[in-house]
Length: 315
Image (tube, rainbow, N blue to C red):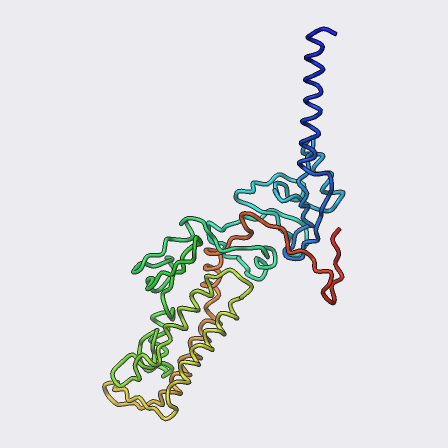
């Protein structure tokens, strides 16, 4: 056998060995785990090798699963840097969806977003056209009535921008005129003035938590956040003695208020205002702070076959 032929044979065997080793490293057994955590097809966790993209697609279709790279959605290529594959809330068909809103979607519906983006996370994106960097003394959004009063860090995610109670100035004036507020103060309508009960009736803490609730990506909807704020405001009112009175001099005449009742009235007024006029703010915050799917999607928790009522089995 000539040296050249020996050399070619050796090269051929090396290719075979390398290919065999690569296949062994990639694995030859499929491990498609039912994915109950997010609304996607079963996730195939095996790191398998394919000779071309077509072979991979056929494998996924045959086994009703997708590989973790998520580079295809509904049979089409997808830019995984900006999009992820979800199931349409109405049709159930796979479709690509932007990971992060960068422009305001006036038709945004949180219930649909939450259903399609069950694996959402807090946005880690840098400031963009929709979300400005939180800065004390500056408005967080053009549509806001008040500037940011406090910035709270949230790890590497976008910071919480807190401006306190966001009752618009005109609404505050109307609430005073109709007697729902004693004082024209959005954060403390019962105590912020001469003769008032003082900081004991301040809603600032309740409103700050409400700001964070709107800016936190979880299953909570607007009603949940609003009701939690109402509960916190009522807890503030409960600390005011039921027989406490506030004398307010409106110039032409003095008015006497039961401070405890006035506090509850102010809380209910603010809650009602959010119910009817807070949807735009909620929609804006969720678009600013929520990313549809995680940057690196992990495998779902293993199925516990020993737990009562568990009928699912890995496929």
